[in-house]
Amino acid sequence: MSKVRTYARNLLANWVGYGANLAVMFFVSPFIVHSLGDTAYGVWSLLVSLSGYLGLVELGTRAALGRHITFYLGRKDIPKVNGFINTAMTFFLLAGLGLLAAAAVLGVFFDSLFTKVPTELVGSARLVILLVAGQLWLLLLMAAFAQVLIAFERFDLINVLGLSLLAVRTAGIVGVLRVGGGIVELAVAQFSCSAIEALITGLLARRVFPEMRLRLRLATKALFWELFGYGFWAFLGGIAMNLIWWTQTVVITVLLGPAMVTFYAIPLMLINHGRGIIGEISNILGPQTIKASGAGDFAELRWIWSWGSKIAMFVGIPLLTGLIVFGTEFIALWMGPAYRPCGLILILLTIPQFFVQAIRPGGNIIAGLGYVRFAAVVTLLQGVANLALTLTFVMVWGLGLPGVALGTFVPMVLFNVWMVHVILGWIRFPAVDFLRNYVLRWCLCTAMFAAACYAINLVPCEPRWWSFFLKVIVAAMVFVPLGWYVIFNREEQLMLFERVAALFSRGRPANPLESGRGVPKDGVSRRPCRARV
Image (cartoon, rainbow, N blue to C red):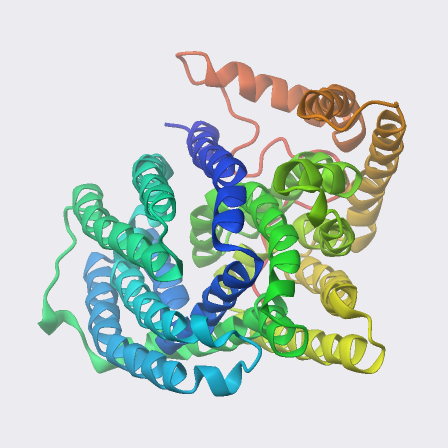
């Protein structure tokens, strides 16, 4: 199967999986919010946020494992791959004990740390913390198997399993809430599904990678230190990402109360799902990016950056612009008119995503080239700036929830603009060419589409689902030709036409999109160059 066919298959599989998750979110999330109530749902969101901190017990070795499995598979070093798998699983078994201990300590001091949580929810929160820790332990143990599937680019299997478990998980959540269950029963349902997922993922990994061996003797200290040496910086990056995305929930709970968490969690839910849709483009390119890095193929890395960023923005511009223009109306119809104030938070959280998604393929390039230490330090600085600005906006200026969103907005824009300049230098991609042939096109397309969306939104109509979806359909019809002619130049359009035609043909014609051939004539050199690692 050609590279483009593989990418198309994987992207389609990932989007089908994400589409199913979006459908479940659309129908089930309002049910969960209204079943639990604002305060209980706020506590649930807080506990989910805390799970991100508990997950740091793996010290970044999970991210390192994914990189090393893919890297050494690219070098055909099967013994090394098996060594890393067994070393990581041995460490995860031991780390799980620390995970449960940390959860127990957090449970003991929960009411002292979060004094605004109602007393009647404290006992349930303590049980949920332990269940969440157990679920994280299961996810750690299955991490090696999941990384094997990703390394072999079997996103189709991952999504078939995901869809099956999504149905089971959804049925369990709806069932426990219909009989009057609360956050404890919700956590039990999640834990049970994770146990099933871990078992089946292991069986699938063995099928895809028959050479995989699970032997304790294959685990070594040397391999652990190699993982940890890379993973330590991923660990710092994990701390930074928690500061960026999940610390806000803790700050809101402490300063504004758990009920206000719900008004932040709803727009954040939409942002995360939107990020996920765009992120699947980067995810399917991840294994090839790391393999190209291992082989020193910088022409391939520039190809991945070029097409990955353009396709990400072709998907991201209508999605993010739609959230800004139509998001408030969507939330009011979806959750109820009482949640309309979430619209401002949604806008403030969405705007920085244009900068993030434009360079989304750069994350894989950073991992592949081994610049994880640099990325971790930069992300940590962004996280600290995020927390400092959030506290300033909320405690000093009294901006409330909008201040929390602004604390994320400002550093995210500044740091991502700087990072794109750095990544372009690593892969020898001229910054002037990137601005002229990419950024200016994206800005023009976004401005034109936003104007069209606002014009569509001015049409007087009652706030009903049918009118909302009609506006979205009209906006989509406007964007497809607009994005096609503004984002892609003529040569790129012809290439994409050829690739789409090839996907449906039995033969395999010459592929101008493979191995750096036929890249748009945008002034970007295609000659390989050496890494500055």
